[in-house]
Length: 117
Image (tube, rainbow, N blue to C red; front, side):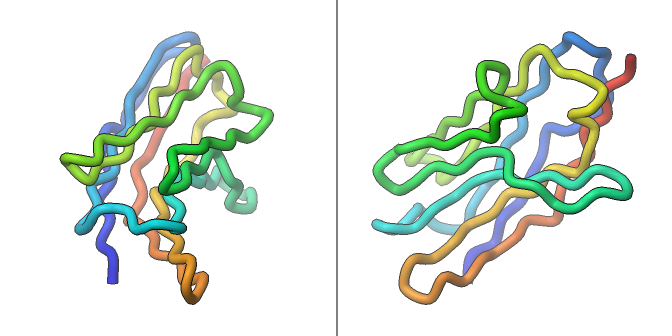
């Protein structure tokens, strides 16, 4: 079991920045993946970014160049720095942890990000 707790969401104007945090109950194991998904009202949940245990990152095209993910292994915390925010970034953002051995996915409770125009 992995518990994930997100924080850092809020209301920001377009062009602004926010940093999301995801505190995990354990360190990332070799071969596992952490990342962020988001779900906007009336839309399907979509992948934002992932990071492997080796530190390899992958970003959705819609956020490339604006969002940066990082990880503090000492704190078991994942971050998502979001810059140049757009109204279309408005969504609930979820932290995830996926285990390699059984492909199980753990989800955080989500944090709301609202970008006003």
